[in-house]
Amino acid sequence: MHVIEHIYINGTFVTPAGDEWLDIIKPADGSVMGKARLANEQDAERAIDAAHAAFPAFSRTSVTERITLLEQMYDAVKSCETDLHAAILEEYGAPSSRSQWMASYPADVILQVIEELKQYPFIQQAGRARVQMLPLGVAGLITPWNSNAGFICHKLATALAAGCTTVIKPSEYSLLQTEVITKALHRAGLPDGLFNIVTGRGDQVGNAISRSAQVAKISFTGSTATGKAILRTAAETFKRVTLELGGKSPTLILPDADAPTAARLAVQAGFINSGQACIAGTRILVPEARKAEFERALTAEVEAQHSGDPADDSTTIGPMINEKQWQRVQNYIGLGEQEGARLLSGGPGRPDGLTHGWYIKPTLFTDVNSQMRIAREEIFGPVLSIISYCDEAEAIAIANDTEYGLSALVIGADEQHARDVGEQILAGRVMINTLTHEPRAPFGGFGHSGMGREMGQWGISAFLEPRAVTVA
Ligand code: NAD
Image 1: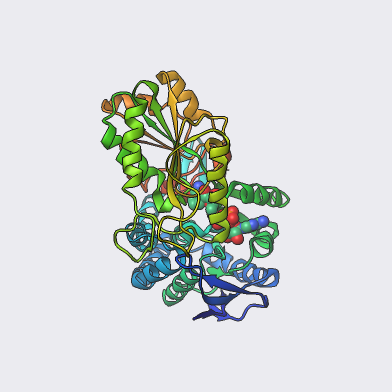
Image 2 (image 1 turned 90 degrees about the horizontal axis):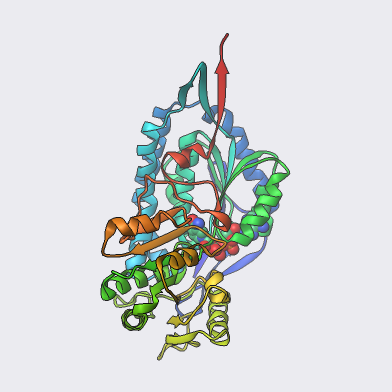
């Protein structure tokens, strides 16, 4: 049994004032595998005070000093990869293909931030003005459960690169991973107060951070509903806010695409992290003239997936994070059937042979249209919808017929043409025939997918504010 009873404030593991204990549930079988004591608002305020006290000195450090600290952070996080992987498997149930990446990404992303920091133009000349980029102050970093360690390390490294100090509010569904990362960051030996980690309920700890007048910036990744709540609260104190929210991303398969190749990539895009990914390509747009062929190819790909125990190497889709999420996905599968979509694969209930754990049958609907809720709302599970189009103009219109705009994938044989089509889609990231992540490029969404950008130079800028000094 895991027992987590500390949070991290001002360089020290401390017992929270909060006295609520939360069970840690293993999604692979629903069993209780531990418990954690959660922080409350009082703890959040102590953490904010510590970050606030550390800010004046830290904001004056040189880029070279900050690079040294980030290198210490990298070494410490790199050395915890094995423990992190074990926690990810146990706590998220991510299949090994995904969990390996999730375990190595937190260290990798620190290196990426170091590279960006080396090149960041903190001082620029704009006409007669000398423009200085100044750190905003204390940054509140709030993470979702679905890549908690990666988001903690990415947001923290970027905030520190900019010269901000931080209060981190990790997801309460990532307690084991947070503990591994907190211990690693403690070993990194960063000065006290630079990062404080207070795991607690969003409406308590998260809300206290969004409300605090001592916090100048919020960097949040999570659902659109929570993003809206944070934005409203943060408005009172004019916080700068970066929001990385949900998505309902299109995968547009063009008429010249090879069906098996396109189906492989489309299903991979849709089932990233067992479908629990903001960038998952859950709306698959196929040309009406080749609909039957693409339906067959996509069905074959979906049926080749194996939903089951994440410890099993053949598993490609693991369980949902918790019972609530399992129920939510089940409801959407039922809704798809009620709305008149036709089931090609999967459907309600658990996959055959599985009686425990939050497993979903990989599900593929066709005859879906843009008015259906399964085509408009983020399901956050392995449920894909095929929508057919008559011509390219209609395909682009359907791709853009969404409140979201996080990511899009275009698949076609003529790459230049696919790119031309992709450039007509309003999404923060448009990928042509690839799912490769480009860490130097900005990441974020249009519309309800968020505000602002992370990654690359844009990511560092989000923790800074320009001051222009002009001399007579
Ligand atoms: P969530 O919004 O439920 O929770 C995210 C975090 O916000 C948690 O730490 C939670 O405790 C906290 N929170 C909840 N209420 C709060 C409040 N009132 N004030 C402040 N903080 C509060 O999201 P989740 O279920 O953990 O994550 C899944 C969602 O995240 C999906 O919608 C997914 O698309 C999105 N996501 C987006 C990206 C991206 O980069 N755009 C990446 C990953 C996940």
